[in-house]
Length: 129
Image 1: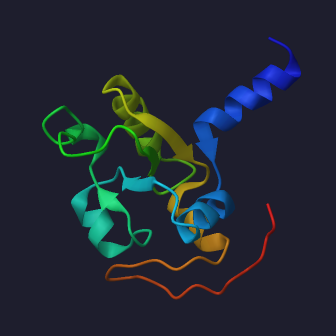
Image 2: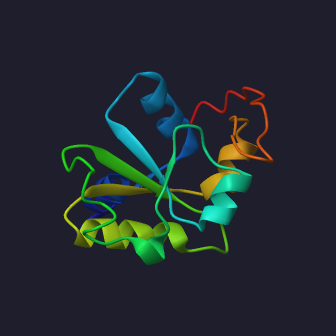
């Protein structure tokens, strides 16, 4: 594999907060999955995200999900690998999935709004990634 192929492949499996935000604004068929616990989700999460903890991802918990859509998993960020475990579980179940780089931490650092008990208003930083 050469460098071009490597980076093209990498972009098939990862996304950043800018690209995710733009996809959501445009109404693209992207479903965001918070792969953390229900308790963490209730405290703070990305708007429109659904909560399916990675430990509970199985045919039963994902039965009603549309396999034609793109799913983006996330967790707290660096130091947490629930998003990776969630992406792996979703891929094993036959879903097209990407992992959000930096998770909720980088989502907030880039100035995007969050919902939940500790939700914050977005400050609209234009990183231009």
